[in-house]
Length: 265
Image 1 (tube, one colour):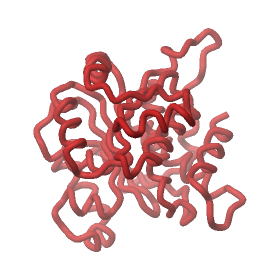
Image 2 (image 1 turned 90 degrees about the horizontal axis):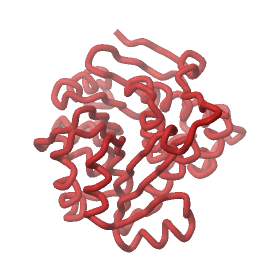
Image 3 (image 1 turned 90 degrees about the vertical axis):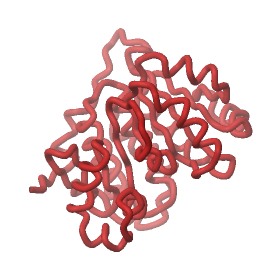
Image 4 (image 1 turned 60 degrees about the vertical axis):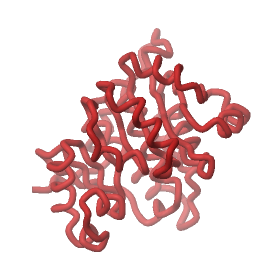
């Protein structure tokens, strides 16, 4: 059974800021990603995380990206040190791994560093494929579009498109993860319940909007919102803000970030 919902039904999940809260009270988040060819994806995700309320946002990325990130966005704590990465993941921190990555040596080496840690982790892009390998993650959220879902299941993307409900159930069962199957009427499932978000339209069919969704969900999770509630709320805000914008087409992902921040506030 599918449970339909809208932003109005989940907006109460938004975390409230306490008057005397500090940056640690607002949650620490580690983002991993940004291949040398795709620095923009992880920057969009990081910006969304900060602008949706995360208190501290760390970014482990390729060496060539660190200066680029810090030059434009000093709020993001960007670094390329493996030792610092290991220190950060030794504590209880939410992790988003994948935006802007390819299946290459950097991705493999980085996954090998994190796979033995009991992390709450959101996996996207090339890192999502690594869920097939042995790992110790305690909470796993996967964010596939239809093509990525097909690769996880070893089938054609047309089969996923024609059978979205069966596909999300199969990924749940195969990888023991919460799954957000992106696309028109995004589906979210924890293996027990399947929710379908009625917010969102074709304005989201632009490269980068998925990275924003990843940053938003991970930020909510870092701020203490429960995993399924973070997914449902993140998908709903994301879709609602795009649909209700004044744009008929050409909505840039960077513009969507500010629309989402305005709605949250």
